[in-house]
Image (cartoon, rainbow, N blue to C red; front, side, top):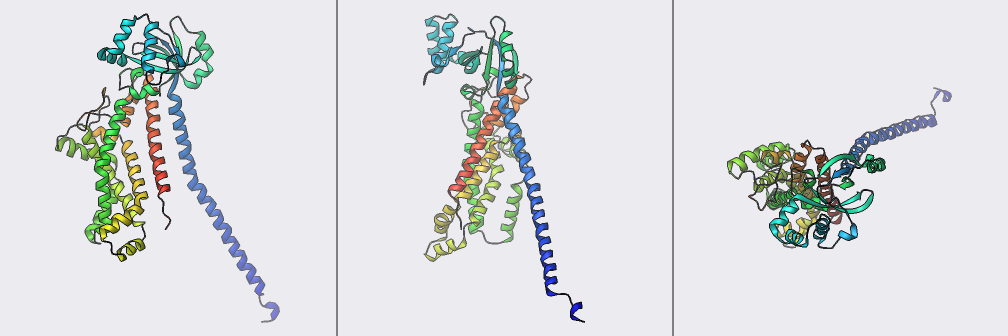
Length: 417
């Protein structure tokens, strides 16, 4: 073959360079496509979450035309505010405006039974607006007549129209359903008097017992499986079952809790039965998270501790656990957050939708935040939608605090091996 007929080395190099560039462009195009496909669900989820927050937050406030059964008077913020006696001060102003004598006011404020009845039937609220005047104290009654209920932004547009259309004895208020009194009131059949106190205390009792029961068992199990258990078939079966149990639907745990704790042990629909049921739910989750945290600790640390003469328990307690605390704590917090938002298993084990008083111990009847929200959403009265929205904001806030705590703990104790 003549020299002119041979392909030049430069041509081969050009062809190879072109193929590499084509593969690079194709790889970059695939990476961009993958980023778009993975980022789209995240953007969609964030959009839906923002829409949910917007809906519940705006629904937690409403404009209302009210016909009060009391004095129909409102009081300026400074007139009613006191550091520790705001309720007494506003009630005193309301009773005086209604024509009550000093003796009657004294009896209501000092006699325990009379005070309890008055507090059950009335609610001291700091309204954002009363008849166009901002930040006014108003004493609402369970017998007040709600003439009109207008959404938040529609009320801003129609405020002048609503004020002009008020009849004698009516007031226009911008009602913040989510206020301090909302946390102090128990459940009620009247939306104005409904509050979260019983549900909050019930949630705290249940979650507190879950922590006491589930955390030692789960962390102890994780330590045994990771640091002590031999590599046997039984250990592998236990590991597989724990991983599977972490993904079992919560309703299954509710059925188990109903069969074992409520009926089998005859505990009944009490706080302890709920805590035991939710403990079954979170133990596999905590075990899996704790084992991953223990696995992340390098073996070189263990070997160094053994080389210094430490026993196995000294290695685990003094070297492994302190370095795994970040992952373990994060797993516990996330498991508690999951338990706090559960509804289905608690409905099966008998959590009450309506509890008018605070639970007084592990063997008392109870309700929790998700169950209380479920009950309010099912009410026919439109005002209960505002009450439910306010409770949803509280639940989302508590969950956000727990997730933020998990993030901060993980950052604070993170180790880069």
